[in-house]
Image (cartoon, rainbow, N blue to C red):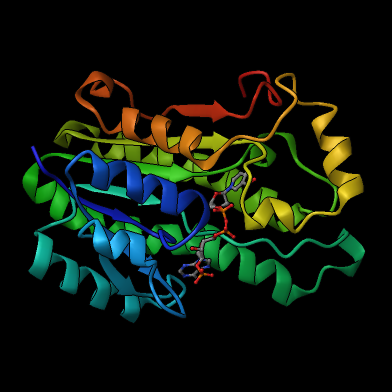
Length: 239
Ligand code: NDP
């Protein structure tokens, strides 16, 4: 059965791999992108690119209207869009803290709230939020990012409780180090330091995160909600 799927930040990195996985499985996939051109490979697969900055409620509303017109109500939401603005605490500006929270946590609230409207009516739906191992472990220089990613866990578990009786599941996928632009922005020194603590001793490929996201939206995962699933090569030891 072909479902209406929305992946935020589906134009590159982990989101792109997630969009691919759903599109290749035959779902109707919409992705958001903020600027530039949407990836041609997704357009060729029949995906619907929608320009949307998730820090703007009005843009989120417009994006949903377009998706609903073309694909019907969103049945699967993958809230993946996220940013980092790393800095040590005493050097972290109010703006850097607020921008990360506004994108990673409040942006997820905006898209999940809008998706829930249709899902509640349909009495079915799957929501997957992309957090990070850093949300549970913390990381020096990432207080804003870690706070936003930990916040997603409380948010998801609240939705799991609030929406569960209407057949909607809400889960969190918590990647460790994934080979994308975000991870590549980190210094060589920091990368080596981090890898020393990853039992599997390597980065994840975005497709490895996508596979777990797809599983959580499959019939096999119908009884899983409020869970945090690590995809981190053992870095967080299950947390
Ligand atoms: P990238 O930096 O490669 O991509 C981030 C995506 O988010 C882009 O598509 C970007 O769009 C989008 N985005 C950012 N801000 C907004 C916004 N305001 N509105 C709409 N879209 C936005 O990151 P990754 O693919 O690596 O990360 C994806 C998710 O996975 C993030 O939530 C990240 O925190 C999480 N994660 C990543 C890890 C990693 O090691 N890479 C590890 C753990 C978690 P645009 O192209 O327009 O900028």
